[in-house]
Amino acid sequence: AQSVTQLGSHVSVSEGALVLLRCNYSSSVPPYLFWYVQYPNQGLQLLLKYTSAATLVKGINGFEAEFKKSETSFHLTKPSAHMSDAAEYFCAVIDEAGGTSYGKLTFGQGTILTVHP
Amino acid sequence: GAVVSQHPSRVICKSGTSVKIECRSLDFQATTMFWYRQFPKQSLMLMATSNEGSKATYEQGVEKDKFLINHASLTLSTLTVTSAHPEDSSFYICSARGSPLEQYFGPGTRLTVT
Image (tube, rainbow over all chains, first blue to last red; front, side, top):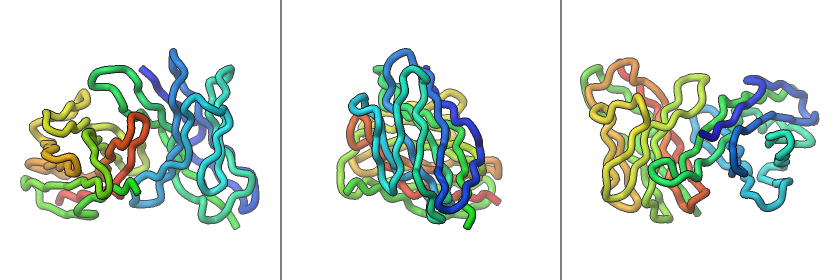
């Protein structure tokens, strides 16, 4: 089964600093990967997705992620953190197998991003 | 576009009662919807896959008789927590599949069982 692992349950950065949230995947085939953001007591919002086109994916709010097959990674970055970026971020992989598993998302453990002024 | 709503956003019920949560796709049709559960400081765990016009598919360990799912139309899926207990208190999130690789999430429902 496909899975993702997020390294670091908490990341703290200063406003204006680089944001780097790590995600590694485990898949026997090229996966479809996603990053979502969740603000407190809210649902998930899609930041970006990798669907085997360009390896560098640009998303909303200035975020981007690079798919690196050699490292089985899909890390999320943002050059300059803003206070409004403080939230929880989830990496996810979608199951492309047939049958009842098709389209199921499997989430990583989540990373809480704190931004200090 | 691609908006998913959930109702109610918060609900408090007494132990032993049942509560129904609605998930609606407002501007698209969804043959498949997903129900997730999220405990505090934890990730989302898929409970079941809801398919319009057919029985839901439950993940291992999820009691289908306790968490009743109905997907009677292309825009509505409901989750009923029957005979709720305090351990069922959680944040329930639904999503609707708009395309094979796209899920749109609702805002979630906070259930508290007293």
